[in-house]
Length: 167
Image 1 (cartoon, rainbow, N blue to C red):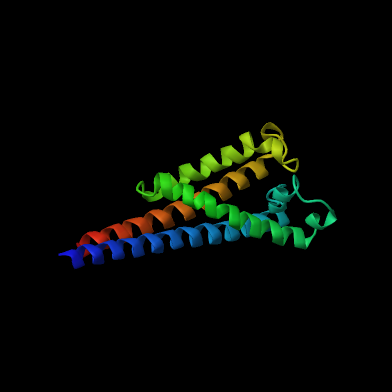
Image 2: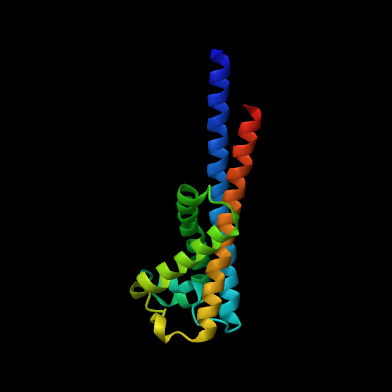
């Protein structure tokens, strides 16, 4: 009996570590991928906001406006995205489905464009942005939210159902 409790506790710890690793990887790859797509949107003039806007408040020098600045900003967004994914996992992992990811993406958009906007001089005030920039930005944030949300919720549901089967 004691062995079973020890074994179940050990398995539960292992699945929690596995879930944490999945959240970390989902956040990292989601941030890298969707910021790269944002760079492509900037390159083709769908948006006037490049990913390197994240460096403007902190980095000095002209390098942040070159390819190295773009690369560093994409990596930085990937790292920040890990925290964003863990917030989703803590708050909404049980929500599941597509709509929670869409809502999370819209919430992140509003956070960046309304609350954090003064921190980023490269982002014009919300009312001054053109339609293409707005639509592209909202869509990128929604797609990012769906990617992170659906991946994390699916992984949680998958591990939760596997744990129920083994018990």
